[in-house]
Length: 303
Image 1: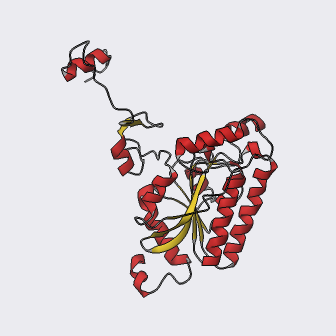
Image 2: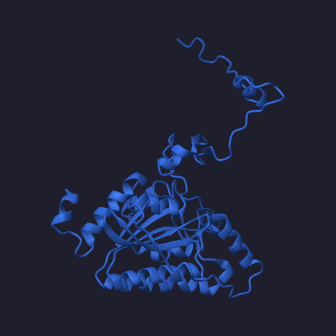
Image 3: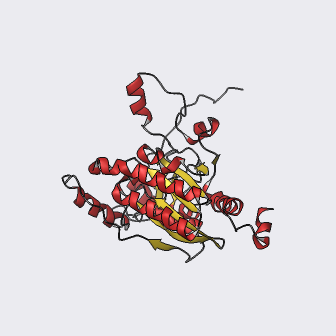
């Protein structure tokens, strides 16, 4: 029964020469070249995903279902009706109030690398015809950190939505407050939270979706103030990171601490929603919670 169970495993070293030989190319003259960006390695399971297929699956690994980080424009494309997005406040400028060395140069490099003006994209769009104000943070821009420009854009988004009587959706992703701006970055926590409060007092709906990672001052302000707070599977959500906490208290944290599943179990968030379901879930939340949306025409969408 156990015969052959423990026999030696032979591993094949896939070198360039082997690849060329399989492809039928001459050993030295015509090497096989794989185009850059054709495959994307999953950071969780290590398996390679065909990048085109990965984008079509909303950047969810086809092997382990890990949700890879997703850019702001890809999220807007995933969520909103085609050609319905109108950008707001792209002219808000990032200052350097502390005259932090090389800060403006780093901002400029981030702009060129991402094509974004700042770490959040804001505006209005439609989800199956339902108009909503939306903000999407992008970890590729300064790790989604919140300085004056990010706080100002989010505050303007919420205040404008209040005047237009629109629901607000914010996709949160951040490493926290931007240290290069010192106290001014921390002030954005109070400013954004006050805007959320006024939006709620006007009887309007506010939803947040926590993505990986959502930490620091963003977590301690508008990210956790949603009428409904959702998260993607496995995302890190907290104020200080787990390594900082362990070093501070000198204790080992529980398994899965600060992950979405842990937060849901302990009542800190309302739901974990996979990407392919987010559009439908957000549409239903708008219909349920936004005044005037649930008319006879839309009632069937909830059945």
